[in-house]
Amino acid sequence: MPGAGRGPAPRRELPGWETARAIAHRAARPLPPRRLPIDLALGHILAAPLTALTDLPAFDTSAMDGWAVAGPGPWRLTGDPTGVLAGGPAAPQLTDGEAVPIATGARVPAGATAVLRSEQGGVADGRLSGPNPEPGADVRPRGQECRTGTELLPARTPLTPAALGLAAAAGYDQLAVRPRPRAEVLVLGDELLFRGLPHDGRIRDALGPMTGPWLTALGAHTLVTRRLGDDAEALYEAVSTSRADLIVTTGSTAAGPVDHLRGVLRRLDAQLLVSGVAVRPGHPMLLAELPGGVPLVGLPGNPLAAVSALLTLAAPLLSALADRPTPEERRAQLAEAVRGHPTDTRLVPVRCPAPGEARPLSYAGPAMLRGIAAASALAVIPPGGAGAHTEVRLLDLPTA
Ligand SMILES: Nc1nc2c(c(=O)[nH]1)N[C@H]1C(S)=C(S)[C@@H](COP(=O)(O)OP(=O)(O)OC[C@H]3O[C@@H](n4cnc5c(N)ncnc54)[C@H](O)[C@@H]3O)O[C@H]1N2
Ligand code: MOO
Image (tube, rainbow, N blue to C red; front, side):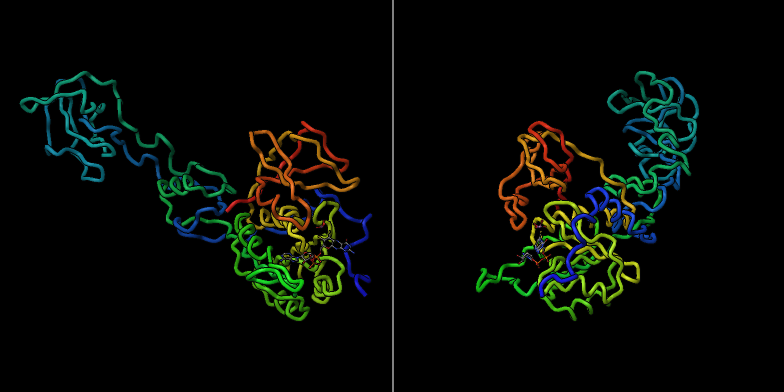
């Protein structure tokens, strides 16, 4: 008998959308940190503050090609006529009235008071003449940017390309980061085809191709996407042997005759932390904690409902596992009124033709993908709806 005792919790018990997100965020602890070489650390989160391992610059540095000069000019040229090069040997100390050619990035010799730019000076008979530069001109003094031990970036900073550059400049070879949570996607449903056209009541799997990439865009390392059909044993086996930090299933959240997910979770002694959410689409979504502590998110089978569950449950879980700061809230004005559900939050695909403007898209039914494929965000419509020009919250859609 379809549904008897196996569907989502009765309507009145469904947590609100914000509550469900908060439960998901609390359901995971940050993964233990690991050390990664800088060239593998892009996109990870710093597990500890980045403190400078050196003064920056590490030595008094010439900011320009020209001459290091000591005191007022004219100056007598000394030393190697090639001058002091970046990364080259240190030049001997200058005394007042002396100058030596110097390249940008080279160590300024002791005794130098400034650098005279090449376009400002002229050399004749071994003597350099030109205007007297201000003391310290075009010299980057040691420690100008930071001293050893200065905190350059706090823990929890995402490692952008610039942050990796800073870490390298500050002397790091490896960085302590939160690892990307390893995610495994289990696609359920005997009706699914993985190539070709729909036929004989069967349809193409639309969730397999999008769930893994979206988890990746949300900070996960998607290990594998497996297609299990509607086979309770295969599901039990896959969940109980998974080595992932997060398991995401698609379909089977509701009460249909072959919706085995809830039964398998009971068999596994998993604890249901969220069993349905007051949100449309996607209200049968679920979150369970497996006995080993690994979370499992059940995305409903209708594709837009799956996106809703991904952003409601999987996104906050991944932020918690990676210790990633919650993104700043973005808001925009609705270009037109959006009908609400009487009691549930609605998540509606929108595009933003201008900053601060959100235009709801057509083809946004729970089983449709045209709307979401053209969208840049989901607008959060409170119960009861939102009028034209009302400001609403936006959930950005992760992009590749
Ligand atoms: N009696 C009730 N029936 C349903 C309810 C309900 O409250 N009471 N909720 C409906 C809602 S809302 C949703 S959403 C779905 C959720 O169903 P499941 O998570 O159990 O998913 P399935 O039954 O397996 O599939 C639902 C629908 O989605 C299609 N599907 C599934 N997987 C994929 C995929 N990978 N790619 C493309 N399409 C997929 C599937 O063929 C079905 O059409 O339950 C409603 N029913
Ligand atoms: O979750 Mo369902 O209609 O809300 O697709």
